[in-house]
Picture (cartoon, rainbow, N blue to C red):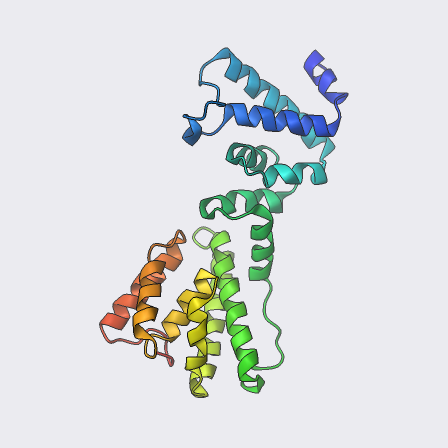
Length: 253
């Protein structure tokens, strides 16, 4: 055992966590080159910080202190969050993955964890949609849209299983909308055009293209700027179909 390893073994876990964060901040990320805290590449100081970071990582992995590492995944310091998610992924793989997937959207790690779990949770089988009240159907619509929103934190491009989850949610949404259409109740979705969740707004806009056209089109045009590539593409396709006078959602609009 080296002198450094021996020293780290006797260091308290909270101190190791602080040391990890300090090193990660000094090493930074490629995009942080203008951060005055970041050490320049190729300098002895940066090499020393890298060596110390990896030594701390080895000790933390050996201890596997989940509770103490979680704040690193949730850090507002992007460098700390990324280094923790990559180097300490084995401590809590779920939080580590959420830490990385939430970054492009500016989403807190814990929120991403909750949303991913929600996306993977299917709706209750009972009661069937035709047996629901209109209020219950509207609640189901909002729920399915939140789950659809959560799929931005899945790997729907590279993981067929995640894509299947998203497709099932999309199919469920279509069923809910067709039930609302059958009851002549699509106008009940108009207030959702002001919902605080962007996916709820966008999906309500799709259904309301024929009854609140101007606002619905504006929302979909805004959705074409989404950071979610699949959501952006879906909005563009919907607008293209609408402007061509073609069906946007089968049996709905």
